[in-house]
Length: 222
Image 1: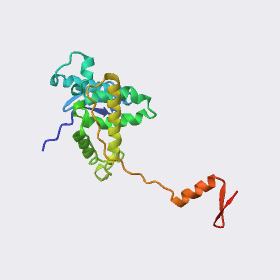
Image 2 (image 1 turned 120 degrees about the vertical axis):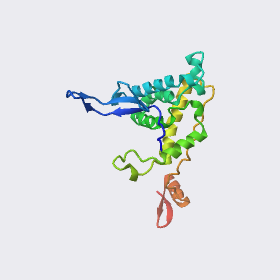
Image 3 (image 1 turned 60 degrees about the horizontal axis):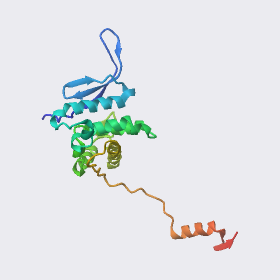
Image 4 (image 1 turned 135 degrees about the vertical axis):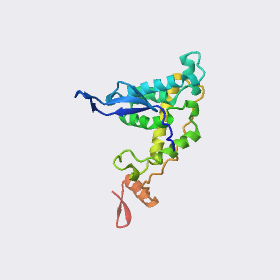
């Protein structure tokens, strides 16, 4: 059975030695089927590598869409904007101003394999649900030794990844004014257990806050 093509994606080629004895550093490559294109970017330039991947995808599929009159018009048309370039612009700009840009970059790297060949017009309920369905069959990437027995990704993790995609689309819209803004459909948020006070406990706190003290089963003024 033939394997499903993954589409253009980033691949980190680890350090390797040449026959002459010199070593080549870690570098990101754009891999598309049997084609590999060097980005010249190491692990410390992941955002730049993402931008080059987005440029490659736009150039690769440029003939599949009718060219817009200018870049401004194209960037406002969801059918002509690839999700990969939206994520790349988000990674290079707004995400860098967050408290933890590295975490956001990790989310973007996870999103790319599924979404990179799609345009914003493809972002809808069915594709969001398809993304979640795919993710919950995948092993948690922290378990590298034995992926087969590793726990699967939760729908709440997929939810956080889709929230990242939603943020990227929102920032793109702020800059380029999309004619139609796609809606991200998220899995239902899991309810977190909370310790709630009983009516009796709440009453005791209220009395105590007003200067009363419970002594021998009776409330007395302090």
